[in-house]
Figure 1 (tube, rainbow, N blue to C red):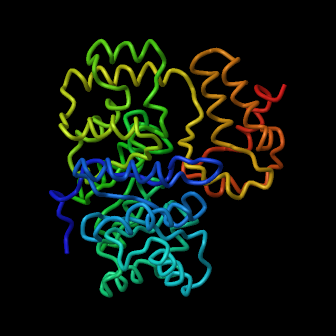
Figure 2: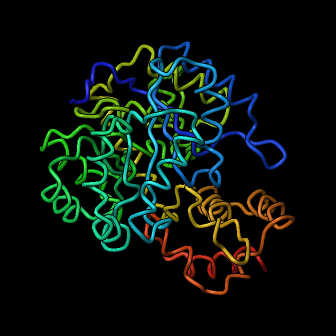
Length: 373
């Protein structure tokens, strides 16, 4: 059963950065966001076994599956290599996910974060591709694919070995198009050439592209005064052929409203708008930033409880805005519940799971010089 792209909403609701209250997911807030999203005629939800420490899948049952007919929404989740050691773990995790989410099948099921070595080797060793096809035959999975954080050459290798893959999820945004580590543009060209539908993650680069430097925002606002800065990033991705769904990890009703507005009456970038956006990108990338997307994979296993993405956010803010008071004040607030950047013991757990392949240990040392003094 091939994917009917005409049924796919352009905007997908990513359940990785849900609103929280008192350290827990704010169910009431999430329900309001789900209702608004569904009422706008959109229905693709993306979660994963590890998001919010497993609570993202649980919130699916409470906010979606128990409140809407099963055929009214599409649900995607992922099998994590780093939580498996034997073939028995595949069924164990899938069955747990079905129970958590309160459903009897997943519309889209992904092998989570394939990259060169590491996760890719685990999925091959545990025969996860053939297993996925078997689960599809059983009706527990409707469409089978993977999310990818590796090199273009490795993507070609995986696709050659597994022509059964129906879709691939990649990180893509205008800032990372030529990024030598993320390689958004090259990954897109490979998938588009092969005619493989794409789900796009990080279209706003973890919020980085929703708020630019004042001079860059002015350039975009002069062209389109009524459009948000985030809408430019979403329209860039939405203008590309072959894109199935664009995920946004919306945390507030305001973000939801803005994104729904962007996609309800979607208009691709004009040639003039694209030229302007790429000029903004070139100016923006003259400032070297830490390429963290705040996925938070690094934080769960940190023995020193360092809020690594938030530390990097403070450092990037200092670089972008050339001021210290606000980012240092933000960092000071983190220390009430988290370790200092200088507390890093160099264990490497964070670097082993970072989709962006950042040298986190060295970056924390540099951050400590700026923030712990």
